[in-house]
Length: 396
Image (cartoon, one colour):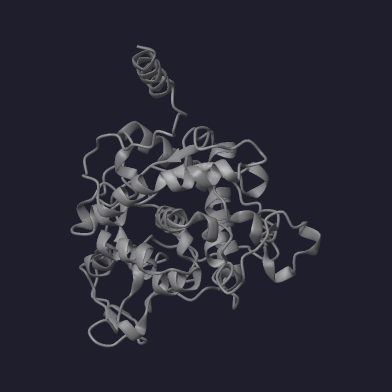
């Protein structure tokens, strides 16, 4: 009888243990939208638990958590009103006076241009091996903050899920030319395509996809970039390229480039590259495998002038969506093995985010010159609490 009582008691205790509230896990789900989840979306949903475990062991000393992080959303997941609010903020930035040094950058006519000339000036550094991903994370974040602080934008920088629009980018919510898009395609042009001589035929040229002329539809049809990429554009009045050279925004929204940005390419990029150097190299393109890479594919899906210009591509507002997606890819890659990848920097050994900036070598700093304060590369690696706690965002 006593033995039977013990069994009942033990069973009761077990029920109590099982019924006790479990530690709450972060709820990371995607709301229903116009596009189904792709394999990269599903990878993100499956990986968040590993990242949550990493953060439990390595909490942000500044208080950022997955629960408090802002959630950057894909453009098509925003309502029309939210898209219009973002567009209004970008137009506001384009209407504000430049803060760039006038003696060096007389062609910077607006606050929006300040970001363009910074990229033009520092493109070599920003695209160097250790800086590419952390520097653009910082650059995109500072642009987002400027929209919020100087133009009253209440949202966050949207990103561009390449796969959603790859089959027909010109008719996508991003490029369809209505007033809640980021503007339409350029008018038809007979330009010969963009040479990519490092790649073997047929990838040695990005073909003309039917655009290439001036954008005449959408909220940015009157945007005049300040750079040169096409042969028929008048030369800049200054030898350094920083003079005022206003003209129309041109695009060739390009299905051929977009074909290299579908989810299978991005999924393979994230899952098949086990170190940061390989990730970055394959992302940028691999001539030996005749693979343009998602970075080039995204840039030349926009194409045109200045979107196809290595130096001045931020002159097309879609640049920030493209590099938002690049940042999302980096984060998804980090989440696959956060213990080893959250401190990984291309071309360097893992770095210590706690190291005082005074002892970090100059080449280990991201310096946006007069646009924003210099920050150690080590402090730009974690979107949850990096940059002294200023980074506190994830991607939906």
